[in-house]
Length: 422
Image (cartoon, rainbow, N blue to C red; front, side):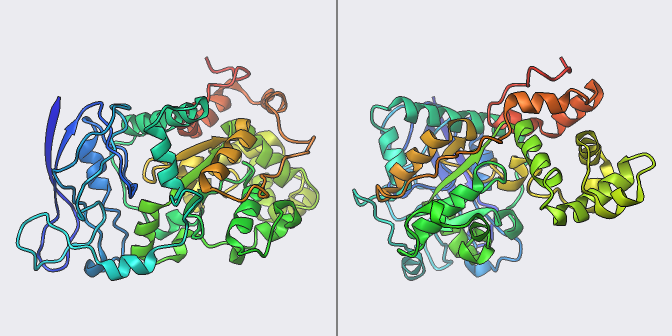
């Protein structure tokens, strides 16, 4: 079925020029771009919404640097993949997020600002002279391995859930990009999620971006991996640089069963004697508000927060009115915005080593760069998580599940069997 769409991009170009989209889309067809685009998920039912969101405007932008959405009609279908995944290849210089000038004669014609774009290009040419993003989507056009099929299914599910549950798309703000770590050497964007192997991933990113300074991720002390100056985040770049990287880099994220991650955060931050900063910052407040007749010692030290008190704190309406959740228990969809930033690879904690190796393969990383294998015997497991929820009433279990429901839906996690909410 042919669908013809004409959209006026909701951005202001230099002067009075308008950016128009005019595109024929064949449902169930896929278009491949040699310059993979940030907004690579288009389908018949969400084309308008996706295309509108593709402008990637950021508050405070100057009109002289706003990206506009322009697609030409000479896009040709290459192969069938999925009606949910429609990518585009335009055989012209007029691509998504090019720049518009008012002195052109025909509507919708874009002139790429080659000097600026050239200044932003990076040196990530892998073993086959391709970026990781090109390596990923070119392999999708060929016969897929079982691993590639798994990752395509994860992308499709994420896209479907986003289409179903997020009808209104908001604009990205610089604050939204603080968790996106940038590797300009290899063309990578990694959204780190605390309690999902983020220390080891930061170590790997330091090796990849270190120009030879580091060779083995495990040689990097854990505390050094979390020093903000050791890795750049996307929020530190200018708006044109942000758009360039969102469009051209491979974007990946690692997720974990939401309640297992939550219990892991609780155990690490409230049951370890060395985390005095968290005890003072959060523990004292939790005990003051959610414990009947607390002792003076508990109010002063905040080092014996019970799990049920932590749950009450999360569900207390005052908590998020006063400040955002701490990143260790914030929902993944609020940290990494997977319905705005379209992730190319969604790795899972449950298949951590396999997914990590897949990404390193796409990057073309040196064979000496290995993702650290965990030797921890204290990691939070599903059985351990079930024990923590034994003393939580069904009423509060339901409310807590609703709080983290989007993470369950977006990343295809089932309702835990130990919950009494069915």
